[in-house]
Length: 161
Image (cartoon, rainbow, N blue to C red; front, side):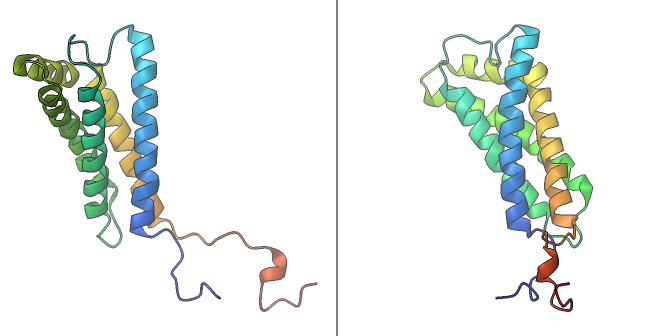
């Protein structure tokens, strides 16, 4: 089987998968390190439990994936696609926190306050930067036109010497 019919580079769905995994890793790592540096909680409102944070990251991740997949439809995709990815992550996180707070049975005022704290504090910025960097990475993967690594004996026109 030969790869001659497939163009070089990464297909948009594969780029979205790699960029989404990168986003989740950057978001979790960035929030953890920033939490240690600033010596504060990611969601400083008490009485909510873990559901708002988990649901917030899940909605942010889904938003990131959808926006990046939409942005990679262009030929070639532009690097400015990363900006809507960052905004989508920011808004998705806030919406997920509010819905997660309501689902967990907390007071609606606490859920909105938690989203406000994330939006106005460092966690919102960390997530937006993670979305921006991961969006740039996804666009880069879709734009690059690299060939897979080849051994010298794989060349068809070479006699192997």
